[in-house]
Amino acid sequence: MENNKNSTNEDFKIIGNWDKQSSALKEKFPQLTLADLKFEQGKENEMLTRVQDRLSKSREEVINIIKKGQPEDGKIQ
Image 1 (tube, rainbow, N blue to C red):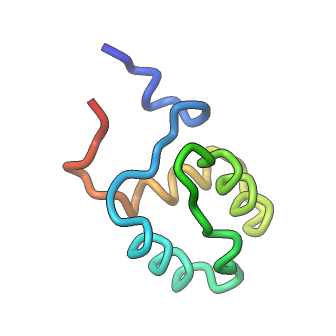
Image 2: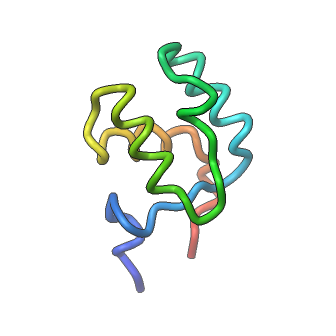
């Protein structure tokens, strides 16, 4: 078992429809821009850093915010 997948850093992955999730984040946090939410496969950390800077939140807070918008049945196993 890899409980480290739940750690809030290196192994974070976007699950589900990012377009939908990013739209919901933009509604909840209007200060986010399309550039902040631009996602490229393998560059999750760069996107997290942009959102973290824009929202003035910790990395863990940003990851938790994003995870709340991800599908529950789409967990990486």
